[in-house]
Structures are given as structure tokens and as C-alpha cells.
Length: 42
View 1 (cartoon, rainbow, N blue to C red):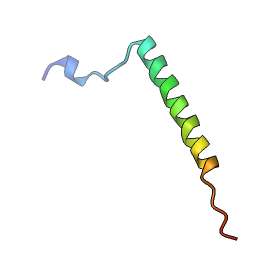
View 2: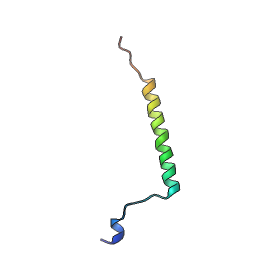
View 3: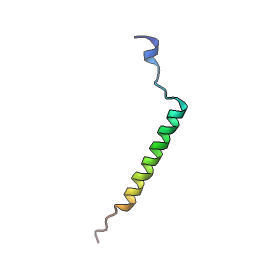
View 4: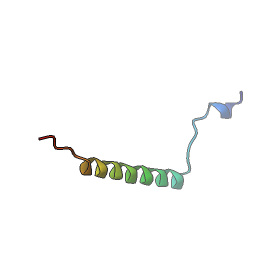
């Protein structure tokens, strides 16, 4: 095993920014569905 095998994988800054934007959009979509799917059993 070489030293490079021990390194933590890192994304380039622009790729990381795109990933974070995607995750934020997914979170907003998920929260939106939670608001739409409300059940009133009364």
C-alpha cells in the first residue's frame, strides 16, 4: 500500500460546490413534499 492510499479523497472546489448545490436543492424538494403530503385524520 502506498502513501497515496492513505489520503482522504478530495473533490475539486468547483465539483464540491456543484454537489453542495445539488444537495441543497434535494433538501428543498424533500421539505416541499413533506408540506404537500400532510394527513388530517380528523
